[in-house]
Length: 92
Image 1 (tube, rainbow, N blue to C red):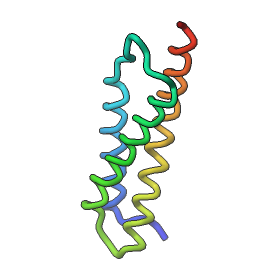
Image 2 (cartoon, one colour; image 1 turned 90 degrees about the vertical axis):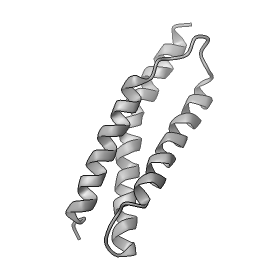
Image 3 (tube, rainbow, N blue to C red; image 1 turned 60 degrees about the vertical axis):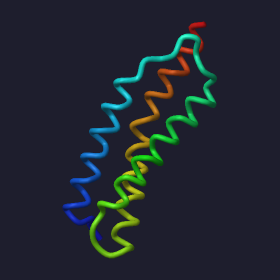
C-alpha cells in the first residue's frame, strides 16, 4: 500500500532539512571519538522521527510505515556523513 501524499511530503521535507543539518556540520578540533559522532547522529535521527511523528496523518499503521520510511531515509543520508567523519579521524 502506498503512503499518503501528505506523509510522502513530510518525508521529503524531513530529508531536505536533515541534509541541510549534515551539510552545516564542521568537524570539531580536537575531534570527538567516532562512537560519539555515531551517537550524535543517532540522536539527530531520533529527534527528527519524534518531531515528524506528531505531523504524520492517516491510521496508526500508515503513520508507523511513514515513520519507518523516514528513519530509513535519514539513516541512508547519514551514512556518507559518517564515512566522511571516519576519513577525517584517520587524517590525525
